[in-house]
View 1 (cartoon, rainbow, N blue to C red):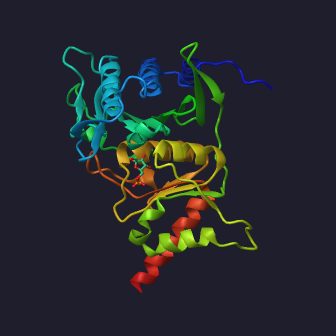
View 2 (tube, protein in one colour):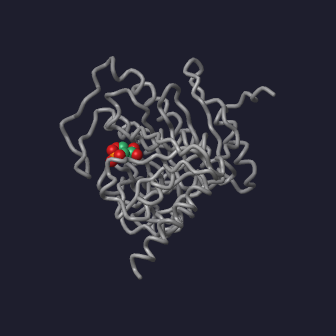
View 3 (tube, protein in one colour):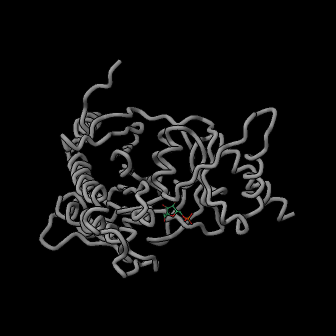
Length: 336
Ligand code: P6P
């Protein structure tokens, strides 16, 4: 049966109709986000032509070189979302502190946290990059402006999460808690059209994604698990294949569709909880997968700071659960 022709706006509206009390604010919020993504996609796709490759010479709050497209994506999201009247506060990988809604703009009841252009070190080699977003309800009551407290919420309290991936085509993948749905941008129409309805990730994959260059920093559980994946075992046949692009959205998206496990292990991890791990964890769980630090479910973590890092083990449920076993057994034998 041919895919129904449906834009992401129509899909969001259909989902909204499932919530009788819905006011349409969330639909407007997501729709504005797709506008920002279309603008970023246009710039990403012509980056090589207009010399916006390379670095601005500045560094971001984490001391990482800021690529010009990073800056453009940050500004685009802020300019589009700051005035749409549905947000009370924003937070971004590219900003040290919370981003207040501009003076004169209406404050809303939602919180948006985002990584404007993840994987930006891949920009000038034309590899896949992405924008990741997480949406919460405002929880503070004292005034209309949102605060840091509104940002430091558990991933399990997200009301929406998703990403845009700028690759051979630009896609949007999102969830509001009713399954995971993918939309592909048709540049000739300027519309994201439904292409992957109700994505389910395989219970077990044959792909693992990890930066093997960090092997000597891994804990014993991670080392044993990765060695286990490489064994040619009768009960499993061919060992897993290593696929690692070094761009979280790209590695996550491939494994979501094909099955597999992505690992950026501890002790502290590199990836950010609020605008990388939590949104992807909501997506993967909605698609039947799992996301943990090895010790606890990502969505159960109570954030304590805006840019905190966590170990991230995410993908096919059986693969993640097996990793958790290896990790915990190694922790236990180290303690004995
Ligand atoms: P490493 C990109 O810089 C990023 O933040 C993620 O997109 C990616 O998964 C990770 O870092 C890659 O890190 O240490 O393997 O280069």
